Image 1: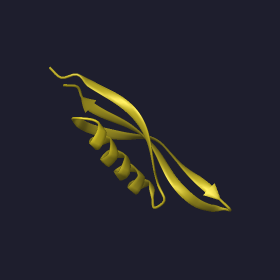
Image 2: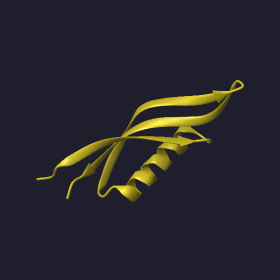
Image 3: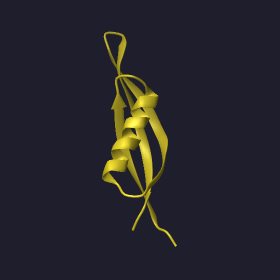
Amino acid sequence: MSVARVTEIIASSTKSFDDAVEQGVKRSAQTLKNVQSAWIKDQNVMIKDGNITEYRVVLKVTFILE
């Protein structure tokens, strides 16, 4: 039997939402062991002078406890 845990992280990118997700998953896999999945809880952008400066995603990352 496995036991999983879900943690919430926020990741950002100046390129796109897809890149923010990719960066968040990559970074969480470096810190957490046995990362199995992630789902996007929320998305938002930072705006300055009418232009998007940063894309942000809130991810729920699931990993299996040892």
